[in-house]
Amino acid sequence: MSTDPSASSDPAASSSEAAGGDEAAHTRSIDDFDPYGTLAVTGLYFVLLLVLYALMYFVEFAGRGASIIE
Amino acid sequence: MHIHRFEKLWIGLSLFLIAAFISIVMYGFTVLDLTVPGSDRGGGTVDAMNLAETPFATPGVRKTEDGEYEVYMLARQYFFQPGSGQSLTLPAETRVTFKVTSPDVIHGFQVAGTNINSMVIPGQISRFTTVFSDPGEYGILCNEYCGAAHHTMEGLIEVVPPSEFDESNLIEQ
Image (cartoon, rainbow over all chains, first blue to last red; front, side, top):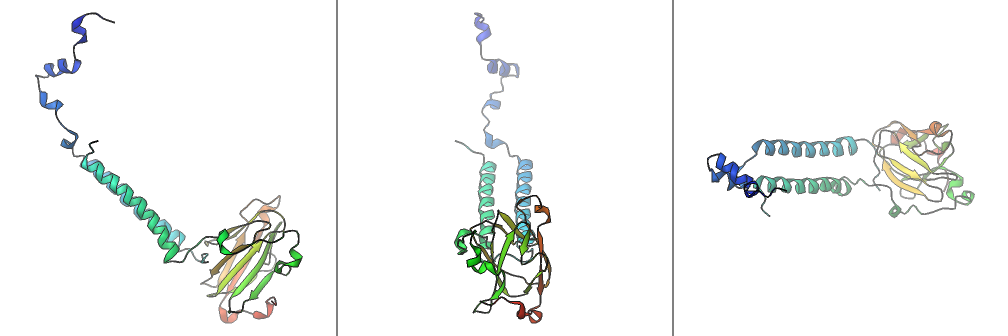
């Protein structure tokens, strides 16, 4: 373990200094990002799940001839 | 904990999907009148060693007082009685209640291409009601390994229009 005081300085601080002291990069919240692509893919996947589940149940199961009714 | 609004959206959608899946199955149970064979069907039990004293001694089709039909069937190594050898003839568009049991080992009773599928357990009567809406031939097969010749255990149900159903072959009550 180094005893050099300069080695224990905050690496984030030194990197922000290297980037010109842009403090705004550290105060951004998660709400500043809107992953519309992820939302679209997730939404499409959910719609697919619902449609295929309904198809499996109503067409392949319920629509398949004689069933046990009692 | 802070959650992004998109994440809230798809967490909500996930819960909606689960609710939708359960609702679809409940719709089948309630509106479509679909059901599964179970212990609450009133099938009851029977002494598998003494079937001679039960209606299973003369398996076949019977007519009930309310004009419906009952099939007493034995699934045994390695045939369905009735069903194998000579086909079982049933009327279409009529309620038919199957009562199936086994004198030897566990069998399966599946009408191929339909949703009729039940285990057949010695000592238990598998009871289920169905309606064949279309005349035609329906194969029965055992889907529960029951011995060396399990793969040969099959039968045939011949569904005929109600007007062509011959009641002279019914078993007397």
